[in-house]
Length: 105
Ligand SMILES: [Zn+2]
Image (cartoon, rainbow, N blue to C red; front, side, top):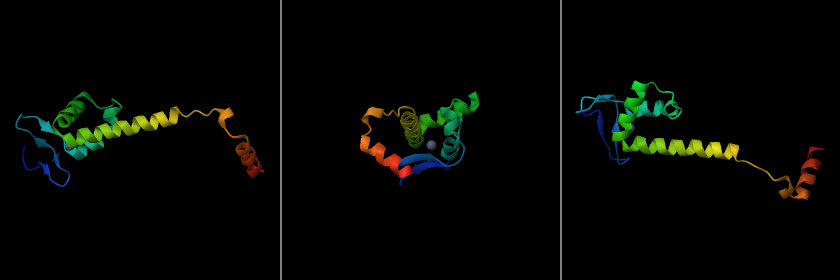
């Protein structure tokens, strides 16, 4: 790969700063482009050609692969916290209910 892909010493990872053509002849998206398409990728909304470019980048770029994993985990946790929220009315202290009702007037 050219100088547009290099090791980021501060982050300790290899990054692709601009779209580059690898020694294998394939084109690689930049990390920024991968980040921009993350939500569409996870939703399965990327066109086949774009998806292939995306996955080729992820196979080579450890930082984007890690970013994708944390993004996916965050979405799953958010979904679980929204859907799995259950309240057992019997478990709510009676005096709390009384205090809330009194405060509402
Ligand atoms: Zn990357």
